[in-house]
Amino acid sequence: MLLRFLLYGLWGWCSEILWTAATEAVCGTRPDDGDVTKKVTIPRAQRLRLAGHTCLWMLPIYGSAALLFEPVHETVRALHFAARGAFYMVGIFAVEALAGLALRWTTGRCPWDYSYARTSVGGVIRLDNAPVWFAFGLLLERVHDVLVTVERPLRAAIGGAP
Image (cartoon, rainbow, N blue to C red; front, side, top):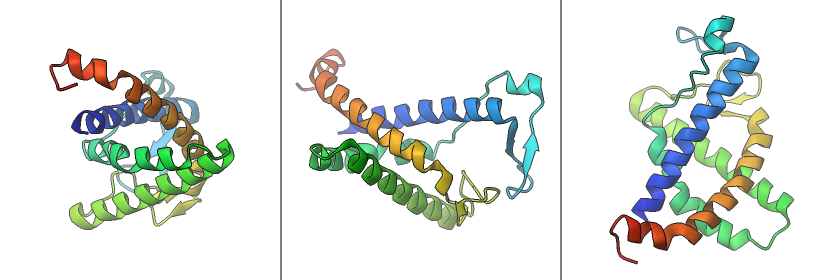
């Protein structure tokens, strides 16, 4: 389980870095560090650097997919893709909201403050991310299936129990 937790955490980190680099390059804006309710323009040269970002808090949040997503995937596997995608979207929104509120409560700040967005709910989720979470949940199904397929040889390769 620890191996899967780390693999999902790393998958999430990489996905977030790619996502933030691509969206900032395409949109040409990012949240203002001084006032998260505003956006600042990113100069073209800086946008072309494709400098994505994440934070350390995200590893355990993404890693929780091993505990939360996998059992759900097994339960809803037979449903139509639209139902599965909608289910994952709601689940991801719930985890994002709970994690954001927990981080805000414990650290005083949510690392992904969406207060600048019109579709923000409490600064911790953006409703316009619904299609992204729908698709990402369906993509995670494939990741889960691959992990199940390669887990035994991977454990053997790193010296773990079969």
